[in-house]
Length: 166
Image (cartoon, rainbow, N blue to C red; front, side):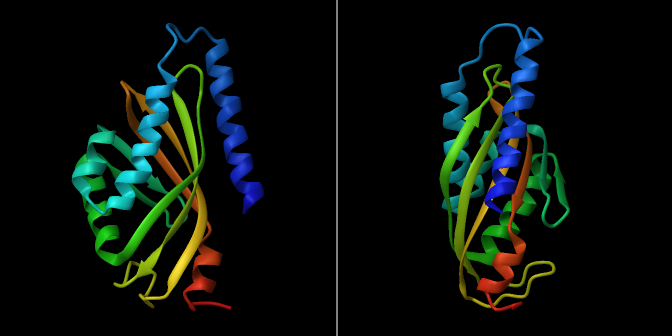
């Protein structure tokens, strides 16, 4: 999994670098965008949809790659987030690293997701057992907000930790 996370982050850096060399225009405030990534983790950890939604554009494309779940638009993201918040107790995202491309168009976060699943989630029965899973997120920014979000996380480790597989 560590190698996969590193590959995703390297690809993001490379794509960001390629975009930068094509004359991306004025430099972007990457510190402000790094703050958006920190707020992303804080908002998911808060279990409050009101803290999460302002970080995203109205037409956000939010994808949980592991589940193949796509939420198009802020209303769909609200539904996805609320179902996640309802299904997981003690939900926390700890940022391990983050990156924003110099042109401010792309970013990535490496994180650790912890909690307990207390309600069934599509394809995952609740076991109420604690878990700690690594993952990463690749984002695209537009006007200081996240317009595209793709989450990648380790389902096999999750399943083992909560007793759903060996």
